[in-house]
Structure formats: structure tokens, C-alpha cells
Amino acid sequence: MSGLLRFLSVPKSAALLALTLLLTASSPAQTTSARLIPFRQGAKWGYADQHRRLVLPLLYDEAGPFVQELAWVRIGPLYGYIDGGGNPVTPVHFTKAGTFARNRATVELNGETFQIDGSGRRLTTPPEPEPETEFLTQGDLTRQNGKVGFRFTVGQAVVPNVYDEILEDYNGLLFVRQGAKWGVINNKGKLTLPLEYDAIRAVEANNFVLPVVEQQGRFGYLAEDGSLLVPPKYRAAEPFVANVARVTTQDGRTGYIDSRGREYFD
Image (cartoon, rainbow, N blue to C red):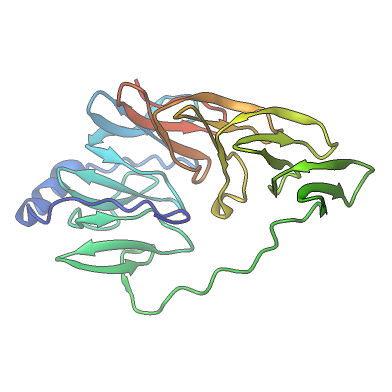
């Protein structure tokens, strides 16, 4: 699994069921929302607005996030794509489906893996290479006696050479490691999160913001100021995609949270 793509696998079966599933599931909602979040009630999924009000009905057995106004949905063992009004963009016939990224998504149909565009058409050209980015943008690393520090380009803040590793996000936060533990320093050189965490995972696809934090096998998220957005409490947590993230609770319930940490499942 890489970047924005979450690839889903199901058994290669029930092909004859696809048309029936599509017809029963796609009573199109005519209201289009600019921001819809996958919402689960019991075993069924729909989409809610940012106030947790259901906008697209609970028609699906699983649902993915809207990216470029397109989202994958699962009915039974098969997947398809809908738009922001709940209207089908493709038939529900794929045995694998990925979230859209850079105007394309990876799917599997009849045992063949390929990519489609936003209208569901098969793409024959490879994606353009990812642009090269420089991770350290706020200053420079300093080294002394095998330890690492940091000097910010703007301002007078200097982080002493006492760390074993330093990474930076696009908000000017530093993720610092001493031994096996990680913490966070802001752009004024202040420790905003103590060195108590087992891992901090930021991804370029999300501009290195709202990273996942791990502590004793539980997962949460950092806010943009380096404090905890969500304390480590989930069994599993995926990186944010289009301001939503997929999480699994300790009792095995799966759903999404938004960039405020609000849960969209019951």
C-alpha cells in the first residue's frame, strides 16, 4: 500500500450478481455536497456531511473517501465508483478498487489489474512521475558527536545536537527521536509533544500533516500545531486522505474520522 492508494481485495466471484447489485444500490441522490464523509451505522455505510447528518443513504457494505468528487463503494463482494451525488460512475463489478489519486485509480476486473480515469475509462498511459520534493524546508540539520540538531532559517530557534534523528513536516514541526522514542518540536524550538511515542508516520501524499502516532500498540493523530489531535486509542489508523482517515477501534469497529478527530460511525 503506498501514498493515497488503499487497495482492496475480494474473492473473484459473483460476477453475475454485479448488475443486480448496481440496480438495487444506485437510486441516485440528487443533492451534491462538496464534502461528504463515509458514515457507518451497524453493517451499512452511507455518507454524511461535516455535522454527521446523513446525506447519501446507507446502501453500501463498505465505502471509501471522496477524492476528486469520486469514491469507491462495495456492495457484496464487488466494487464500483460513485460521484458526490451518489450517482454511479462505473458499474459495481470490480474485484479490487483503489482511492483516486492524481486523476486515476487502480482496479481489478476479471483477474486483470489496470487504472481508470474519473469517468471510468481504462487508461493506457502510465502516470507522470511524482515531483521531487525536499523534505527539510525550514532550516538545516546540524551534527556533533554522532547526534543531530536543527537550525531554523527564520528566527533564532536552534535545536541542540541531542537527537538521533530529526524529520520535518510542511508546517515547520520537527519529529525528533532519542533512542527508540519520538516527540515533536515546533518552529520556536519548543517541545510540544514529549519523547514518549514509538513512531510518528507522516506521508508526502498528505503534505506530511496530521501524521499517525503510535504508543504501546495504539494509534492516534497529531494536530497541525504538534499537539495531539487524537490520543493513541485505535487498533489501526491509516494516513489522512482528503481530510478523512480510516481507523479501527479496539473492539474491531471500522470507520472514518475527520480532521477535527470527530468519528463518523456508531
